[in-house]
Structures are given as structure tokens and as C-alpha cells.
Image 1 (cartoon, helix red, strand yellow):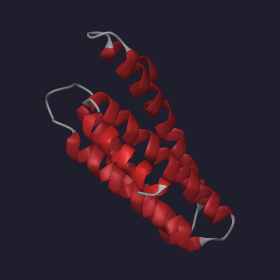
Image 2 (image 1 turned 60 degrees about the vertical axis):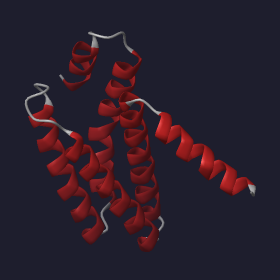
Image 3 (image 1 turned 45 degrees about the vertical axis):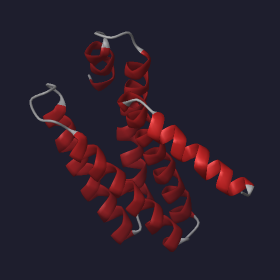
Length: 136
């Protein structure tokens, strides 16, 4: 097994053994990696690379939306609306080759990523307060 295969295996094992909170933070981390790569590729005129990263980011947003359970948390409808807005924003950013729209998505998602990381690290029962502090 070469180094790349070993790394891929370690990544698979990390995902399979991760808690739901850790998986959520991993998705947000990867989503922002994809968006930053897409923005950089757009700025460099590498439209194929930008598109690939935007499509992957859209897939993550779709997965995040699918994981929401309405009625289980008061913020789920708001997040669902945000995910729908972001999905359309990324489609438009891809079609129009607009790095500003990608930057807008990044600006919307960074506070959420921070909130989810803090919530995942917080003691049980304090999660809603932690998230609420970041979402206003």
C-alpha cells in the first residue's frame, strides 16, 4: 500500500468512526475548502477547477440539508432556507463565473462553521446557546 492509499484509508476510518457532531464539522470544513479553492480558481481563470469545487460544495450543501430533521430543533427551518439560498448562489456563481458570489457564500458559512465547531466541543446542553451566539 503506497502513501496515498494509506492516507485514504486513514481518512475513511476517521469518517466511519466519527461522531455525528464531528461529521458535521468535517462537512463544514470541507465545504469551505471547496469554496476557497473555487474562488481561487475563478480568480485564476481556471473554470474547470472552479466548477468541480463548486459542484462538490453543492453536493455537501445538499447533504447538510438532507440531514436536517424538521421539528427537532427550532433552527432547522432557518438552516434549510439558508441551504436553499446557498445552493442557488453556487449555481449562479458557477454559471456566471462570479468569484464575488463564492465570497458571499464563504462569508455566510464561516460563522456557521465556527458555531458548529464550538457546539461540538461544548458540554451537553449548551449547544443551542453556542450556536445562537453566532447566528444572531
